[in-house]
Length: 421
Ligand code: AMP
Ligand code: GLY
Image (cartoon, rainbow, N blue to C red):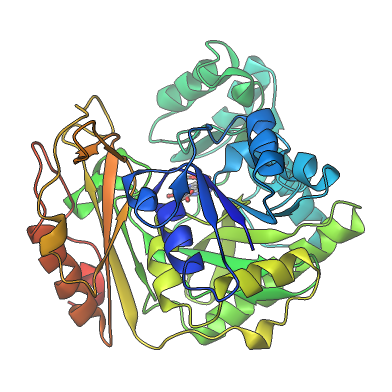
């Protein structure tokens, strides 16, 4: 089969790496890809948000199956456009992707089917939003309704900060139309876990759970990022809790989407807040997580293409999915300054010194004119190791990190540390 993967991050490199192990994958294209995907597939310089360009590429290159990584093309209707042209694609339609692209839509679906989540109210009017905030206790949770590249959720410690967040969204429009509605949510405490599941619109097959680290620096200090590392599985989220989350969150939502006439196929990603045996939803994403995918796929013992095709065909058999026992740890290596200003174009050394059993998934990298791998983004590499124990996986991942070098290289030293103390 000729497969096209859409996206350019660590998630997409991990998808391409795993798909390359699938028996039926022949030629593989990536749009636009990075230096890591270029080593195992053909990169084509079409941006992930260019729906018309991607459709043209898929037709011209006679693609059989398209796997969409990021949320933006999903919310722009890439899957709808491909399917209309008779090209099979993995991921939700534009309507179904509203579970991620509109937080108020997700809350409505959860309310309709009784899925536990934070209580919330939606506002388009500043005065009404302020008046509601005044009735609450800190901390306050203010979210832009639409997509905001992971920056749309503000946890405010004071009423003044919460008012500013509302003003930023509704008045200053810092998130554009994504912030024309704000969702004010009850603050939930507990431990966060990412549970991703494959679904064909009816059946749900949970993946192994994982935890990501959103803050830039050790000890969960510093600004929020796209994710500085990840591990699987979290000790506090056992098989019983996976089952509970599947039964109380994933299946009801998939059924409610189908009942509403908007069948959801693809990966359903639930960001969950766990407090003892209480599980509540923080958010849904309509796609594979990044950096979760980089630690999840090395643990998958099934043929990824077959799983994705079965979701597309409405023939997913959850019992046919197999996972390797053990643990995985992924450390993100970033450019100095990230998530603020950082330099690009730094030559990356040591890539060949990493143990070949440790995966180095590229994120923001490219090949320069001399064929060298150089930095090309904030998050540059994901170093991922598996092991029978978390301590073993962690040690191997950090051994890989220690062999890499570029000017300004930065990473957290405490990924998965809480699992080994
Ligand atoms: P989101 O973009 O909705 O995933 O939110 C980003 C981050 O904000 C989450 O990973 C949580 O750490 C935090 N967060 C979001 N919603 C809440 C909430 N209702 N209560 C507490 N923390 C939250
Ligand atoms: N790990 C967060 C995300 O993929 O949105």
